[in-house]
Every structure is written in C-alpha cells, then in structure tokens.
Length: 277
Image (cartoon, rainbow, N blue to C red):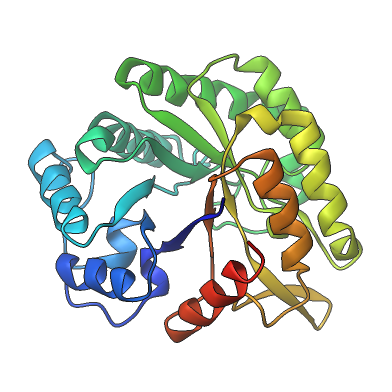
C-alpha cells in the first residue's frame, strides 16, 4: 500500500527526457515529481513555452517506461515582494495548471513563498497581513485549478507563511475548494527544538486536514550545527517505519516522494521502504 515516487532532479546526470524516464524505471520506481527546469535546464519551460504538445510528448516518453508524472512542480515565490515579478511567476504557475492534463499530472505543486526575494527563515512571514496576502493568491491559483480540473498542491514549511498545522488549517477553511490539496513534508515543519516530535506532527496534520493531503514528501534528516539537514532516506534520524505504518493506514497508495534521496541511494531507500510494507 505504498506508492513511491522520486523527484526527477534527484537523479544526475541526465541526458534528456527519455534518459530520465529509463533511469527511474531502472530503479523500480513508477512515479515522478517532475520539475522541468531542474531536470531539463536546456529545455525552455517558461510561461510562453508550456504547451499541449510538449506535455503530451513528455507524458508519452515517461509512459513508454511505465512512469506516471504524479506531480508537476512549479515552485515559485507566490508572494514575491516585487509585484511585477510576482505576476510573472503566478502566470507561469497558471500556465502549468492549464497544461497539466497533457503531462498526465493531476496536480501542480508549489510552496507559499517568502516576503523576501530569496526563500529564507524570517518571522516577517508570520504576520496577519502576509497571511491574508497568501490566502488571496492561493484563492486565485485554486480558481484556475477548478477551471482546468487540476489539483493545486500547496507545501507548507517554516520558511513560508504557512508554517504550522494551525496556519494550514486556517488557510483550508478560507479556501473551500475540492481542488486545493496539501503536499505534506513534516521535515519542513521541524527545527532543532521540535525534530523529536516528527511523528506527533505527522499525526496532528492528518487529524487536522488529512482529507486534503494529496502527497507526502518523506525526507530524512540529521542535525548539524543546530540545523536540520536533509540526507538520503534511511541514513538519518527519521523513524521511517512508524511514519510509513501511519501513512499507509490512513491513506493507502498515497504518493510518497523520497525527497533529497539521490542517485544510487534511491534503490537502497526503496528496499528499506518495501521492507516495511
């Protein structure tokens, strides 16, 4: 009851679309979270470049290797402080939503950005005004999702306005749409003081908005110089068995993305996960 996925850009080097699909298939994985600019930097993938033909070509190339594009990534700063740049980024995201069906993806994913141009931790993200601004942008994106029957996947984290279970719950209550979903990465919600509460936070999130969780990022971590540092799955502090047992009981076959697990470590992590099935 585990439906594993990898991020395409966690594999390198990659020599084109077909090569990535074949490498993922060779690792025994059948789902990918695909970021076009991260995996294919030489492929134009901006607002004006995304089109049905491109989506269909990529979908078919992955399907030839029995790979499903589970999540189409378009991670942008949705509250970019430069309003002109913000509008440019939002239009890019909307173009991905409009074309997601051609890629065979049911969702397009992003985080909620930052009050600064560069994503970083700042309590300036946590004001009421910033929260309200974030809500309005999410409403706009979800409306596009509704129009094109595509889920909008929002990923919370400490570096963003949606940084707690409570703030996510409030956002969900303010944006009542079947096309709003949450991509949950508990590692993005923990710090040096709370990392030992990983399982409790996971369970709290499912209790608060489990019906909205549409994918999980399973990201292992270590503590280095007082910071949470991502590592290959199975090499850090994450209690993988407890997390997987809970997830598969609550949401069987939910997409579980092994984020930040790279290259040869993907096959080892897959064996570890399958050992807990």
